Image (cartoon, rainbow, N blue to C red):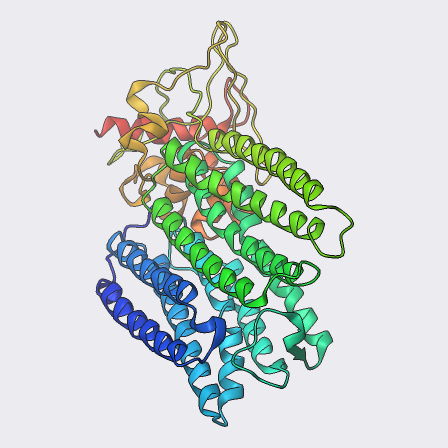
Length: 505
């Protein structure tokens, strides 16, 4: 469901400011690198990648602001600021170390922890792009709190060992941690926090239908990129020992990976916010995520089998890595393709007669998607099942007697391929008087008509699934929809919403 609010003017000029600031940081780091300071922190590949990612996040913030997604726009602006801060702390750390300044230690500690906030903010940006309202979800608070604590703990407890020659690399032996148990506990909490939003959004997506499923799936793929980046960081540690890979090279690779993850996440956020659910676009997002995960697996295993301590010869290593690449890469490509097809599958809805609630209240605007279920015809062509458990789809439709899937009626919209499904049904313009529903109940009913499951409705409206269930019970009572009959109450309620919307076209 798409929020309809005024844009944030302050974010519209953000790309220019971000670009100028990022450019100044890149020039400063290039100058320090030319003077022989900083090591990998001044490598052009890493610094330019961070600068590009910061500008991309600022552009996304501006676009989200123009489209009325205030929360997502502000979070994208925060992501841009955090990437700029990473660059700024790099300049400060390299300059103070080169000058032998007494603030060199704190500066390096701040720089060494500045990579954590971007991971949190890119997840929050993608998640906020598919939510409505002004309430901050509890999951967002948890992610922000835990990863904020992880940043602080990492800055305070982790320090570089002596001698401090330039900036330390990703090599584990370059660092020591005070109060190691505290650091380990916070690290585990941070990993759990990074997994919370992907699990929540994937669950909501797979339990929903049609455009809701596709939009939530795009946001879920974006949030999945953050834990994959952490996995990449761990693989770089493996590449250092036992892989014997140059630590500076691995550190630059991490900066590039973090930047790429940020760009991917904000692109997904803009896509999800606009309701762009074309199969080709969704397939690109899902396949990119799947192939990234496959690449990490191949790199990790390949590093282990190619380590100097391994007993395998060069030919055996090449064969193992090649076979693993084919199997894992092919499996990821096929699996991601199936998942993308599932996310963008057109609703299977046979044409049905209009249904009007008792009392027949009139509506005020249009909807853009059919209910994602059918009713049994004379041949029993559709099997409709009512479910009330969280995360489950409301209805299931079966092929018709000829074996071909049933199709949505033309009057209900064009499916995921058509322009009518480019965005959600704005609750503010829905059938305001249907059964005397409240504003929140109309929002719930509009999301239900789009095909959202209870989990999908909860994810979009920032409420609990228990609250969604309570709203649905109230809606069924007000629309005088009792259990039983040819179709379940969810289907009948969705058809009532869409029928009244069609009457006002």
